[in-house]
Image 1 (cartoon, rainbow, N blue to C red):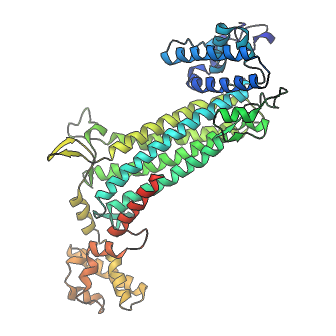
Image 2 (tube, helix red, strand yellow):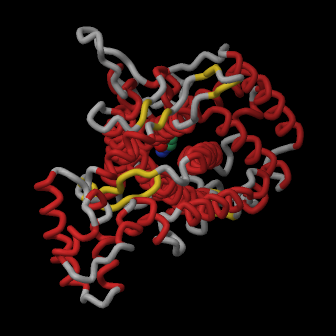
Image 3 (cartoon, protein in one colour):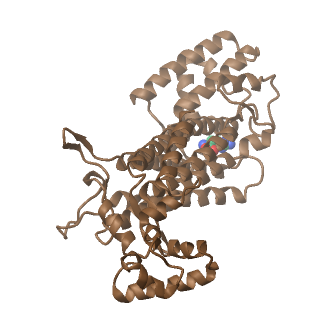
Length: 471
Ligand code: ARG
């Protein structure tokens, strides 16, 4: 078939299965708008440099405008025979405008073309994702603000450790997302370099102006080595690694939501629209969305490993292996966009108008959280610190409090429930003022340095975060 861009050298058509095996148009047609954008920039440069005529450029622009319309309206007919998005569009252009279309590929190869398309596509995706991360961060801030004073147990080893506020706990995720956004913004700088001009691998013999093409496409500059330009996919790997981390953070959050919404914890209630029921057990309300976030994290991690493995054996420069970069990358972006969008909404509190809930939302059971703090000897460290402040070495204080906890446990009560003179049998430094430190509120209030869980600090952290999100 002489439709193809390369069939002249071949004496028989490719095998039907091979055609399907080697084609990528089924998935890379997603790059179409960026492919056209790249082609127009390239053609503009060819004309400016006198490599093609001005009329050819006009014909190419006219043809591409029509093609763009056809693609947007769904009228464009994609053909497997034409292998990939690039050859499909180029063939259509030639059908429309004749020789001018055939001149478009001068000083270009699909190798620098596809690298350019993927970079343009990914740059736009990163920008979308950064907006969504910010939206999720806003949701977290709003929820944290509502719960800057809400007592909950902080855990280590999933055992009650010390009192924290729910707002403080939420702000931990804000911090993770802040670093995630930073990683993406940083990776964007390396995405934003132009491969075009590298041609197949060695550069072009035509007097190309790569800087001009870079400017037209909004790149910060050109890829500085032609071999690297066509074969590098580390920008995609980096992006996927950053995506894996985002998913990993949301997977940890999800794990907590799953635990907290189980009746054993009963800390939170996720709105019905994010849960599903069971086809056999009528009472069930399952936290499907967080579970799927946790599950889909595996899928994105898989894409990262696939991309790393795709690269590791490739000699310079371009190899067809690289065609396999796209599906995992596309799926990573799709998964991330859906996950972030859903998460930002899932955390919004119910909308109440005139005392009536008009939209369900994320509910927090403060009582259950508080009860869990009181059941877990969460202020044992505070009692030890109290003794230290009265002069006891920390190790001795630790020992004395451990015995007091054992005693309270055998009586089935909390440390705060023991009268001070009963606590005194574990250290004669205990005085009447001990109860101030045994309350969870006292424990919270004492952790008032930057990064601590004191409600006043949590509110300051939220204020700083809001300020930082402004720019
Ligand atoms: N579809 C190919 C890809 O995604 C385009 C580049 C093909 N280049 C080539 N020399 N076969 O990588």
